[in-house]
Length: 166
Length: 339
Image (tube, rainbow over all chains, first blue to last red; front, side, top):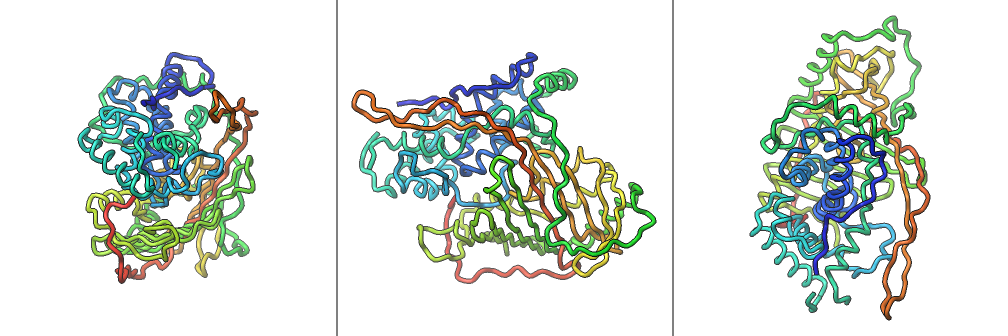
């Protein structure tokens, strides 16, 4: 089963010019993708902050960014450069976890993966991204993404004690 | 366990980080500190005027009220001495002299303590606060982070002798394990981490830019040392603040910046405040039964709430001129590529 990570998000800002409309469209198309990738890599808070910072940068430099061939991938690098300068536990302490439907051990199991493994597992297996999509977004070679996804999923399953296929 | 692990992953990721709103993005101030790889950027004629016009037209960034927060935490309050220079603007040469003297004082080693806090008017009970303590000596550094609100314990990153070490509640192999020092053995991870997790106090000195038009405020005593308070009056462009780590970094727009320098022109303390507009809207989740299976649905969007988030940080430069010692943790457990 595949799930588009792009998705559409409602945007509410006033639509006043071609530039702002183009940015809105770009934002709506790519915010989910970038946020999910950065959250996977760096954790909820830091990943979301990095996403916001990256798009703020995109808004400021829109005249330059709009013509970049791989703008989402470029923004991913922007976000990486802006990520918080500390290492904190990732994917832990989510408010209202009890309301969600996942194994209690899943956050810890994902957190135990390396950042690249976590990124690959979340995007490839969680959101059904192709290896090419992940490669373009993150700048990691497709074969490396595949290795990280496979090894990460194996580690994840091992930690969760999962024996099912999906 | 549940069979669809992929779905659970999506639940976790989407449930843990809410979408960033367009208003958050366009309402932020310029993020000029970012310097992504220029090789990826094609050169195009500048259309600054067009973009500026569109930015003004979008208009989602509401006007930000400049609000000065309270005085810096931990500052010793003393009666100000009369100063014949109060209110006068420092010349560019004076500011550069302070920057140079401070740079020399921190050339080889230093100790910086940062206390920070932030609170949103939409959630005044969920205040964030903590203290970061950073020492460096040559290439070695120690970065201790103590988040007090919400309590998250103390975590330490230490780089000494070319090796990277971790310590703290976030760095355990299994939940409930006693705290231990870990040594990173993945060279790539060491490079990645040390490139972004080594706040250099000297980078902060870049805020001592004549363009900020510092004015004299008066004299005080900080840490037992008589210092002069200088206040930046042009806050639009303050380089160096990106050297502040994590929660101590300014949010949105900087609303005040004060520095205190001693009689040698060496910076002893820095205090900044910032704020940004925030907007929230919640959607409740509920369970519905469809075709015999229980599914989760999102309810209608709740009312949009607007508020202001304010942050402040005080940076104290300690042990000026004194050597710092960063020791190698004993009995560190080697780990490879742990994220």
